[in-house]
Image (cartoon, rainbow, N blue to C red; front, side):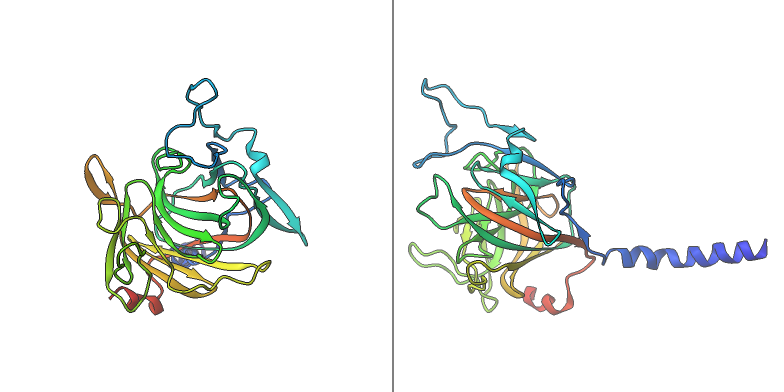
Length: 292
C-alpha cells in the first residue's frame, strides 16, 4: 500500500512538466488520407474576373462547388516519393485545404516546391498559392469567393512571405512607408505600419528579401504565431514581422488570433511536404526584440 501511494505521488508530481513538455512536440499534419483536413472548392475562373459571382451562359448565378466535393481528389492528393508523403495541389480550381482543428499559439513548418502547370486566370502570371492563418467564418468571404476570413503568408514565385489581408482583416507590419503607387516593403529596421481593411495602406506588404530556393528545389517555410503576433520565415530568414492581428465584425475590429489553417489552390501546381505544427507558450527568445 505504501509503495502504491508513493508511486501515485510521484506520477502526480510529474504531470505538470509532462504536459508542458508535450507543447514542444511536433505534430505531423500530413498523412496518406489527408485525415486532418477538410477542403473547399469554388470556381475555375476566367481571365477578367471582377469579383462578382460567376454566371452561366444564361446569366444565372453559378454556385460554388462547395465542401468536400468528389472533385476534390483531382485537386488535392498525396503522392509518395521514397515512401515520404507529399501533398500535391493541382491549382486547377480555386479553393483550399482547411485544417479540421483551430490553432492559436503555434509554430507551423512546411516545405514547398512548384510544379509545372498553371491555369486561368493566371497562365501569364507568376505561380501563386498561400498559407491562410487564423481563418474563421464562412468560405468565400473575400474577393475570389474561395477562402475564409484570415491573414495570408503568401507563397508566390519571388514573393515567398509577402503579407496579404483577406476580406476585413488587418495587421501592423514592420515596413517602409510606401510612396505613390508603391507597396510597402517589410523591414525589421522600420516601425509598424497599419495595413489592411479600413487602413490607409491596403492589403499587400512585400517581403523584405527574396530567400526562395532555386527552381526545382524545396523552400522551407515557417509561420510562428503568438497572441496576435506573427513571423513569416523563409529558409530560416525572417521576411515579415507582424502584430495586432484583427478583423472587422459587426462594424467593430476584434482580435483575430486563432483559427484554422488553409492551404490555397490558386491556379498553380504546387507540392508540400514535412507539414507539421507545435504549440508554443511564448515567442522564441531570439525573435522577441523584433517586436520592441
